[in-house]
Figure 1 (tube, rainbow over the protein chains, first blue to last red):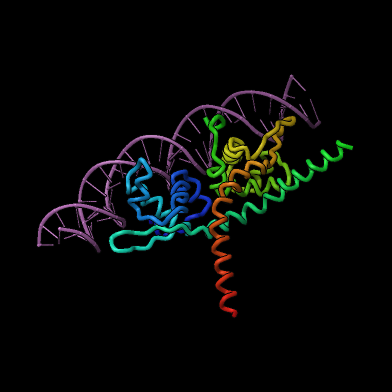
Figure 2: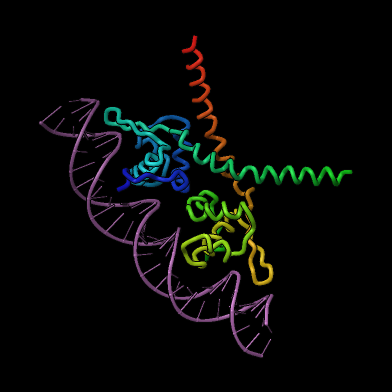
Length: 107
Length: 107
DNA sequence: GTTACATATAAGGAGGAGGATATACATGAG
DNA sequence: CTCATGTATATCCTCCTCCTTATATGTAAC
């Protein structure tokens, strides 16, 4: 019910715990237990977060022996970057407009 | 109960309806009723979404007569941009690594 | 094999998110 | 003033999210 679902990147990064997991995995690949040791909650809870991160392609999980290596897949954030790019024009415009006003004011 | 709460930008953009509201407001400032006309849900529901967007500083609301003009405040997305910037280094590395491999292959 | 470790899954509970309807209030129009 | 319009608020419902504990499975180590 959780793994099959195709999770939204926007929803995936909405949770602070999941964002922290991404930060941790940015430093190094880690098995589930090692990740959960950074949090005050159960391993089960972390597993669920990892499932959501996997479903949105932000993290990949590979079974190695009895461990599961979790790896960050930052490319999934491209969708977010593209979404943001649309709005960047507005604050760019605002800045250039402001700059223009300031320059005009200096005359 | 909703207005006082300081909403997260990450949480604010997690909802597709709210993202659509942002898109609409990117085109032009609009009163609540005009915004809600774009959606198959009640004005009340849209008001709630707008409260959340306001609480995360993504939208400002100004009462003009009996209307409330809603305006996009794209600067609030800077937090998101900065968050993303941290991860961009990783896919940049991957791309430059790929480029390197391709160039090597061409020799 | 037996024991210990890494993980997955099932079941359940509290609270919040997102929606609806009904009511109330303020403002502009006639 | 009266009426219609634009919004806000109160209440309620349902479903999902996040977390828990308990149980099961698979692998490594002894």
